Image (cartoon, rainbow, N blue to C red; front, top):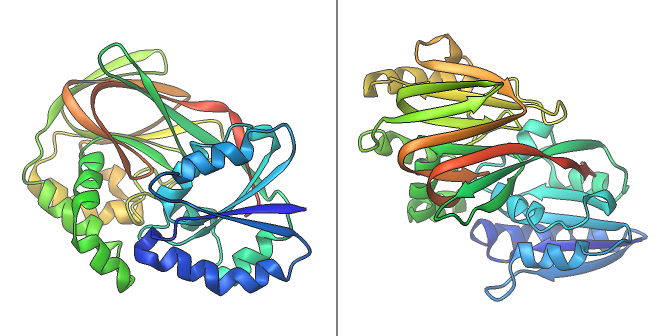
Length: 308
């Protein structure tokens, strides 16, 4: 059997490549044919995964990298029915691996993948981004955020501190640091949400996030009951929160206990339309898509067959 291993050599400040080298012997000692593909500036993870999965034959795809790398991979999958997907976490947040309960020992994850057995089938989200009458689509595994949490991701992407913290395995801290800074500059804005046959207007909204898995942003449980197998999106809406409220609630969000505070609303839906009075940042699995006034979020009919 052929296993296609995809690695971004520069991922996680080079730790993705180091991880592959530490696991290479385990893969090559297996009875499978191992085909390694490395991303580059000219050919990214998405491009590679498109080529590998654009077939009617069964395909085994293994990605080594962080949540962003796995996001790029799922956006490249062409044939979900015939693709069997495994990944080994190596990033600053690793929220997907945490939610799936993967072992901390990477060799154990590799051994599990090499069994080539489907452990679960996971829902995959999709956001439609509206701008200038030319909508574009982007898939996600974990979450899609509109507003403040996506603005944090934009600052994290631009942060020089992230690379430094990644090298000492403290990458999660950058989300806390940037979040604490951004709250002083971000503005509450009117946001209209249409879901479950209702339309609700929040006059002073900080953000809305739709989640397929429970963790995002390095371990925050904005939707603690999110389940990637229930064909539902869990949503968290934060509105009319002062900066003092934010610093009070933020630690509780890490524990998934923030819904007891006024201004925090949790709900569940199959799809949702979000509209704002001004362009707001949007992210998928922490990857910034840009700024938009209107987005639509739903789950794909296809599901991701996971080897982990």
